[in-house]
Length: 452
Image 1 (spheres, rainbow, N blue to C red):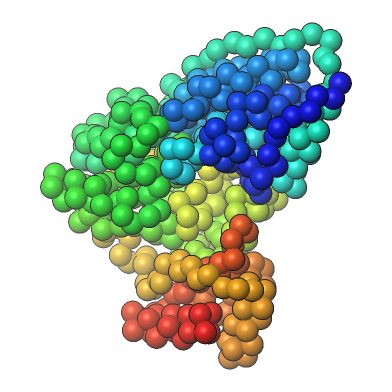
Image 2 (cartoon, one colour):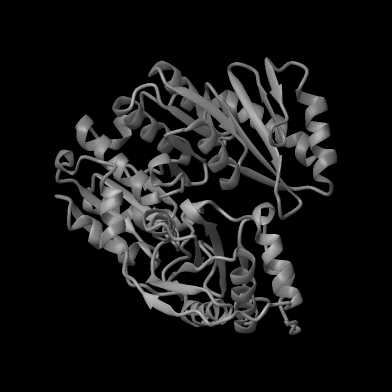
């Protein structure tokens, strides 16, 4: 049966659905998406989780109504983190899962992330565009019978799973400041720390989708100021901030200094290769060169991937990689159905600091031998033409050069990557060098061409 819907196709992105609630993203659209997903996936049951955003209960209700009206049984997990939803789908063999969240976006946004069995992500190329087209058309077959919804609390199961990645007995009584940003980490972290001998100093653990203190987007340095100050004030051993759906985490060392995604990738790699020698570690192409150098030194295998979770997860499956790291705070684990988990990465770092019995900064310092520009975005009128211009200016002297994702050029004592945004007329520059002065000089040279 075809019923005209008012689904705005613009809310469908490369990896998920996202929009402003009440504008492009409406209750009616979410109901239609539920019916479309139920019909397209053609599965008997699906797990549904949601974050603490003010619109999430309403969206969950409409999504569940759409799914059950299409004949699918729903396991309603209630409020969970995104990585707990992935865990539930993997652990309990659900054929698919949907997480209602807009991750780190401001409170007026909401959205959905879909996955298949074993937490395999559904992106534009693997079904999301089909769900979009079906939702827009409204051509839903009438099912033989309606589905039913039941509830299940999986948080404690997830906490035990995350803790299984470390030896809890090795954790020292450290003082940890955690900033949940009024997001889902506020629900999970108290249950995690019940099992640890650490003192937890909580910041903004109240679940509040209006984000009264700061946006739950710790990749922006201004949203890390509170956790940095609290670490210094309380003389804590370490700090950590999570984004809204708590699948990404950003640590702070004992001095209150930021620890970037490359250094988290290094620290987790260091820990895992000591436990599981010879394993394969993947990293995206803007992560520090220190990562493959450490992997080689410790006798592991390393591989470089494009930026983006669908690329890194697929390559991890192909190569049976134990771990994958991205500069953006996403950390993926083979034994977590190749899904990302900020909590697992945080626990591994906590174990590393405990086992090495020295401050976090001292654990990282010998591994961190480069100076990084961080990701610098520039608005350009023509992304492809500008990438060609950068290539023309910089490829000839490079020791190695590739076009895996934009362009990357390595000169030995410095390297850079320039790639376009999927969604905006932006070029993203990441550059790294052996000295601060060289990094700044080369950064300015490349930016002069990008912005010229």
